[in-house]
Image (cartoon, rainbow, N blue to C red; front, side, top):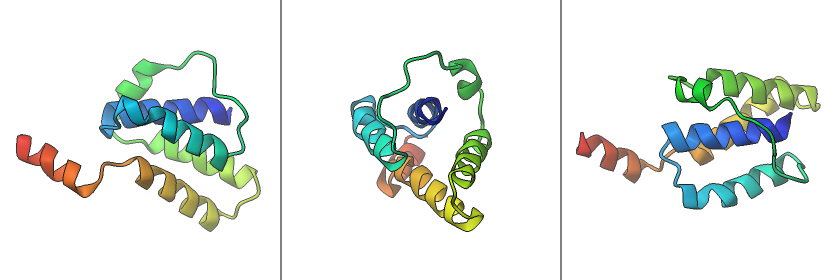
Length: 102
């Protein structure tokens, strides 16, 4: 389950957060280490539902639930999920560059 969630998050970051495809392996490895996952997900992903997301609330909720079920308090889970989403978000200069290009 968590390995699928990681792949969904990475796809979301590519589609909505301007994550460069060349960086996906680095972030996949980081997330797999963070969640003690031994191998990447090798199944189907519902790309259409992720493409249609305006905000990642569904993904945030899934990661929060996973962390809480894994023994973290709600506060600890929120900190971990915030850190992960922040790591995948564009850096300020990229956000400014995108805004100025509009």
